Length: 189
Ligand code: ADP
Image 1 (cartoon, rainbow, N blue to C red):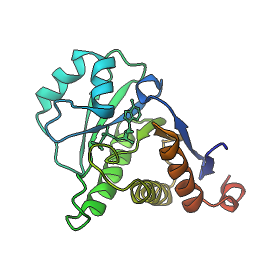
Image 2 (cartoon, helix red, strand yellow):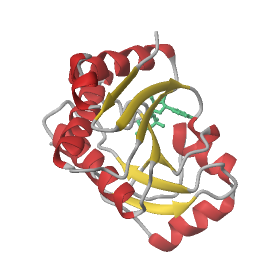
Image 3 (tube, rainbow, N blue to C red):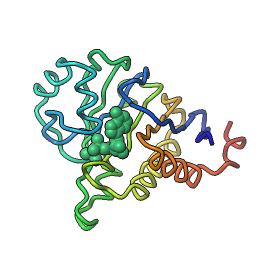
């Protein structure tokens, strides 16, 4: 099944694969606050993109959870990397939900500043940071809908959520269809 919706002239879709291969204006990295790279998608991005990315991260220093910083994409086919720091899941009582929502808000804000038209975003915080996948996907789609609702005419024309595995794909797709029901498709085009 193809996970795809169109809303207010922006396409929102789900792809399964390795985000380092995406030739888009900006890919998002699920970074940690130290910006020095780690495992998961962060490790893959630094390994494939080369040392230039880490050098820029070192110069920036660090980044608080909920916020993001930008570097070039080194050897990757994308143009920019938006390094977003998601919350570490600690049971749900440490503002994790609000921090993840803020993270998505800042990603969209940063993308607008960079005039990004196509962005690819991984399932932030759902790996080593242990945020429950369904709740994280719901936040991702709710924040996307809120961003597009608030924009008269978003520069972002395509938002691709990247799932690394089949479970993540299905979860993201369910939440996409939940937040962007089919009937808004024709209505808004
Ligand atoms: P976090 O520390 O924010 O949880 P992780 O990298 O551990 O970050 O995991 C975030 C999500 O990214 C997980 O769903 C994981 O399966 C996925 N992921 C890992 N590597 C890649 C990759 N190369 N491309 C896309 N997604 C990836």
